Image (tube, rainbow, N blue to C red):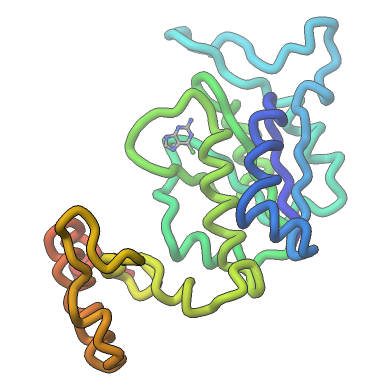
Length: 226
Ligand code: 6GU
């Protein structure tokens, strides 16, 4: 898989993409990241990427031409995704869909967003990572890439690990414990040390359901589910 990211801050992403699962997936050849500096596709002396909004109001809007040129320079843009608080919520199912693409291109907006005509001409979908405003799409791009990369076959090296993640079966995961069995007067639940795996599985399912009911009833709401 190849992921292109168009941004005015390629350095913002370079470090994190070299670490942890995203870094190991790159070393293993499962994925290739291509960080594209939007300013390389400007033509003026000041390398301008934004301008005032038509119609007035505060803030600045990202100009269409640099994004257009950066996208035109890509041999295979593949599925083009714009990161914006105006997007549809990014979730596990979206990550699964993206992980099935061979080429994914992420556009990082800043300020009041990217000129809408870039969206009309190039963007397949717009996604948001939550109901708050970030200074730019870059942290959201890292979130999307991390969530996608860990779904690529071989990235985790342990399918059980992905299968026990939160959201894998539409609910939160069970609480986890490691050594020591007793820590500051608190013990690990006996069931987890029993060696009785069917019983452990039932306990985990019960804990996962209880946590989901308490914290995220929306995930169990069959009307809201898709
Ligand atoms: Cl994807 N971008 C920005 N700028 N803010 C956000 C977001 C994305 N998702 C939530 N807030």
